[in-house]
Length: 334
View 1 (cartoon, one colour):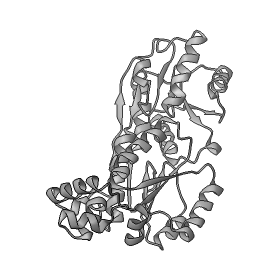
View 2 (view 1 turned 45 degrees about the vertical axis):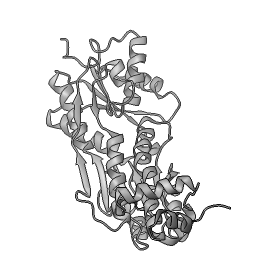
View 3 (view 1 turned 60 degrees about the vertical axis):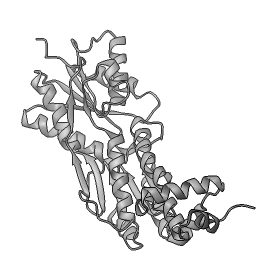
């Protein structure tokens, strides 16, 4: 016969509720008592029922994370590591929802109040409508955001200051003497990410202040967008001396392609990215650093506080961007 929670409580000389809290709310139990309970549970080969715990608490022990791209992307895979590091340790599962269109987004929010199958929702890098926020608020589900420009309607958020990040990128190229500048962005209709729109707006703002009109190139939503970007560059009357990528995943392959066609980086063309992602340091990419793992950990902790009815000390966290100087940018050679 399987051991019961009552068996563990009796042998550990504690109450049944103390056994339950030792597994589900360890912060409410002294370290000494919890250690005795867990030791007894191991001896009796007992494991607390997750479904029973959820039923008793009225919680699903699940957090929904809405992402707008593939899990394999550097940003998404990194934030999921951060979320998992916090949520799994506290007994929560993560339900990943890929939102690739406005229709899919609306469909998710319409179904959620009926199913009531999550304890919180985290939106990453794209906007949601005010009506969707209200729908969640009406059933008391905390809604949080990661790298979403608009904080209104979210109970907590963590984001990098993408507008100033874009300005930092432009000002770096301008300070190096570049006036013929291009900015490579993803195709607007293929992206729900409002954070990257803020990067572009900041970049354009810094250029306007310097009386520079950059060329904005749209990378198509294909397996290899770099070829199309190169074709657009070749069609320009004046070739830029510097290029800023919306993200490293656009800037890094562009460097390889430029060098393949005899355009040296940075002597012929400077290239700057955004993210400081994997391989950025290896290739020597100057970039704007953001730390998605740390951001996700911080937001996950805020999520647990809100689920427990507590207000985070710093609910809306804005992280300043950092310019990382490497060898892919250099002063304009006249």
